Length: 95
Length: 477
Image 1 (tube, each protein chain N blue to C red):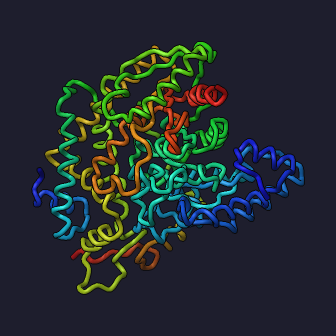
Image 2: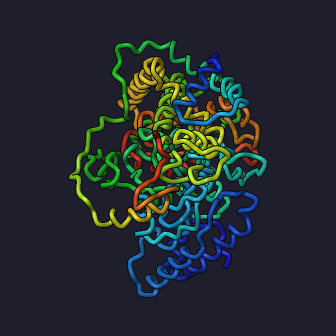
């Protein structure tokens, strides 16, 4: 069983607000799923290479150039931003 | 206009022979949606005007005797985690309730090039996280075969729309079974293509090493038509693959060998489901196909392995919904006390995401966090290698693998929603396929009462055509 403190810590890492009432609920639910994940403890894979993809993936590179259709799209993307100022995304002051 | 249940093939022929116009066909489906969507709730958003406008273009093509692509004038649905420019795309989440897609997904572009009629966006579990479509922030979709039961998920809206004939076909996405399981539950045909066969550009990322877009249709032939229309390299998805460069061995269907993994027929499967799957396999055997028992020894580890990987990737992918760039935000809301930057993150995500999405983000964050990374994420990646090896070994002996899609029949709405782990266990037969990136077809092969049961046909990488041909045989038995 993970502790209530751990639940709060994970929620903060994940940038998820959590009400006090929910801490206990998530503690119970996350613990039962994490217990299920313990199943993997039974298998020894210490000498096995990890797979990040189903097949071998290679890096694909392209030139970093401005494309016309992308600049046209910028306006549309900025329209979706909750707070903007002079064509920039605006965030709260961090100082 | 009365058309009955139409397949793509039939609709295409009907349009060409002028039995009905594209506009009539479009109206007929919009009418059906008007009539039935309230009770089934497969569509979140209907875009009648643009569908009708495109239908008129198709009718002009027909009267000008222009070459007609297969999907021209065919009414379809698109899962609401796939972008269609200018139309809302919500992922069935409150956090994107007012988000309008600023561009077309790769597959959307291809549908539009063929002049398919996109009728609207279909319901899903929020961010494709679920197996029942009950996790939609806007309400559950119902199974058209029994309205008290779930249609499966996460592409439940797409499968239900096709099953209820509110669309001739639909697109879904599949991260751990999200096309195949709803197809099994609704009685439709669904294909999860090989990883890389279809562009993921413009698909909202859930788990990037597992996600694929694929078709949900009424027949295997239709499934091939849609797959052929959407597959191929897209410069904007670096993991998509030019399929013409992949060599294919010639094969004779008569010599195809099928493996049946013994690990898929153990405790936990509904005996009625098992009976139907075994009798379907028997039919293939009676028609002369060679069936043999095979072993995928790491099957029992695949589900926890899948969930650790999928949720780790999800926790990273969903970090983009931060209340700053787009989507629901408390930044411009008046609150009791002035928000700090951290408050904007915490509150926007708390209020925007539903409970299942928050649960999954937290599990993924935990698995990736300092001190747990090796025990969870790295370990799961190593187990993934074993799961892939299992398939590689078996595919040296056989051409395809037959399994059930789901261990259970469509369950009652509300039955599993309070117990997240029980919902995860439903995915037991579908997740290995995503870990290994393989193509797999779900196809109806029987039913228990009104409730359909699907057979899963798993193929080697990029052998979609072979599993589709094998599936098609069954329709003629």
